[in-house]
Length: 220
Image (tube, rainbow, N blue to C red; front, top):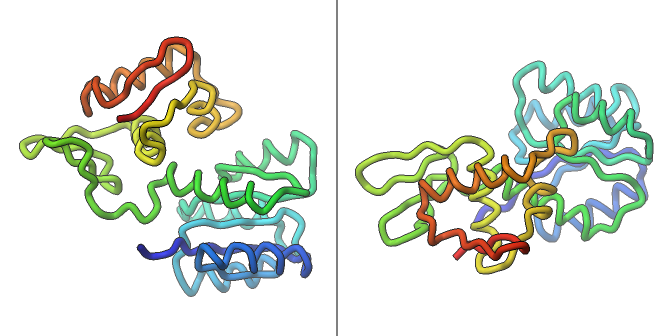
């Protein structure tokens, strides 16, 4: 399987080297020290994920991401920062980030967030996935087919299905689903989550997602 391609923008030479050296064991990664260098990398090729520090020379990570979004660049982005205030968190999400991690952080936590991005945005999943004897899931096209008709999934249904597929046979709590699929300011009610699960079951079969009352769901 082709490795995810990441662009890391971090101007701290020590921290940047530590992150780069760790992540390159798992991914293809380029390192930029400021927004100008990051833009040059982006102009030269496509990335699966951006990891931007806020405080870098020239444009901040938030400003660069905002500019990229204005040009319809939808590449998933994780913001990393030493800021602890809610203002920068809110501004990052408004600029188009999908995740945010505060320094200091464990390298394993960053990797987990990257893997979460892989699931949410079905990165690299460009081949059909057989989910039952009669159903095939097409991740990049967001539909399930029984060989005769195509059943289109809504974005949150896609995210739920991707998460379940990535964690088969494991009990997943409602809280885990909410934390990994919804943004902090758009958390759904229990009824809304149950509605999405019900709709997903209608497409892939009720037997594929088992409810364990009071504990969560298991994908089989």
